[in-house]
Image (cartoon, rainbow, N blue to C red; front, top):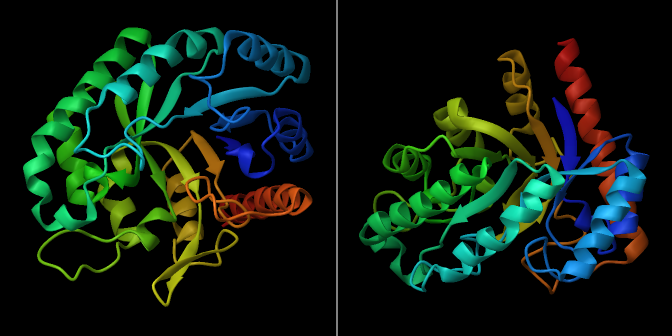
Length: 292
């Protein structure tokens, strides 16, 4: 078991991301934002600079938090951008020894959620293509329960895994995402998902975990420190450890910076301090779970 996180929530600068990681006593970063782009799209000179900084610091990237199939890549649009991102990323993942890539499954437009079934086969086809590319490269795609067809409910997720049926497609479970996402089964209006219910349904397929927590208030998402929201963070972590989970726990606070919402801005020092505090609090949750 190891700790990691989206350190771009501590800082947009790699040096500060490394500093925050080392302050926590950790070795890993789940890389997402790098110099205004990501690992697949920075230029070669910048990539070499990244490699040098990692070598010098002893910090490593354990996972590529890619934009493949994410909230900005609708299922109604061609998938070429996502395929290109993975294609570009693969040699860099291999160079850095990164074995995990976070992906999503192409969101369905809000106005078509009630008719989402018509996109099922297209979602499966795209994810099969992505999983085949990953398998050929010796990496594993971790589908996140966030934006995308397969995240509309835990049943959608299970159907996706069965349809694609690839050793290179597993799950990263985000504890906080169900709290703010609708369960698109049956007829609208839809209720919000339940983190514990979702987790229990898919846990045998989980190889990686994102730690986020929060609640809904007046139709808006409010993010909290781990264990203070409705994501069942403590209970899920305890169950994972009890059942021998030995993968990564990746911090994604969303308290000072929300990667997909540029309107959320924060003072640089507050961002840094929040990320470090978040990591420390989560470590205590793990310590308590191990003692229980």
